[in-house]
Length: 154
Image (cartoon, rainbow, N blue to C red):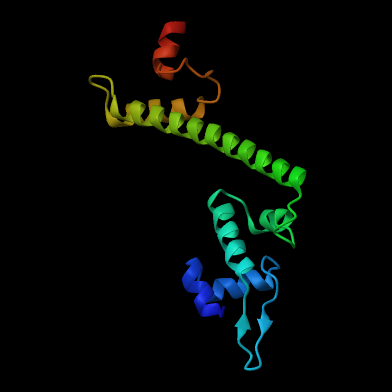
């Protein structure tokens, strides 16, 4: 199939297909007498694999490392190791994002809940102080804000 047909069948732009080819993710297409690229059915399978791998968080270098020259001969152990490594990276990122979300939620809580009669400048100093010392306070139990956790310790 020609590059336009492959682009339409895969949903990948022709320019991206050419890019993948130059990056070694797709084997060089056969050239017809008129210079047009001619791709086999494996190219469509490879493009689908590349897209799915990218959607799962794999970089092009990681994909290149696990995508075999012959799709019928996958390096089983290498593939499993790469997949397990990616799952671990995703779990680590999820924990980091959860911690960031927790910190932002605490900051929002500190900003929204000014003490009665507290003016803006005092509130700002309180919030800034809590940001400076947020690493000093151990994580509260799930569902308990750091402020509530700190009150429990006092």
